[in-house]
Image 1 (cartoon, rainbow, N blue to C red):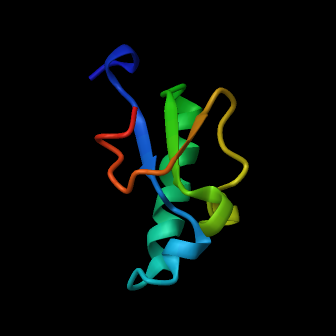
Image 2 (image 1 turned 120 degrees about the vertical axis):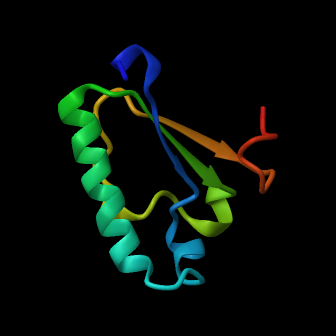
Length: 83
């Protein structure tokens, strides 16, 4: 595996959605660790946000995002189908 073939994609980890996820706190803790590893390894990061006006931005426990991270707001529930 190489950096040029790697990417960390974080999908819709927002306070408005995390309330509905079982054990969200420990999952977010693990995601924060992955984000730190991506920063150290210089792996690109993309973060999607489902309807941030209504559900809020990315959970603050994941902030700050690594330098160069891309945040993509979306309105479609599917991250796969959103342009």
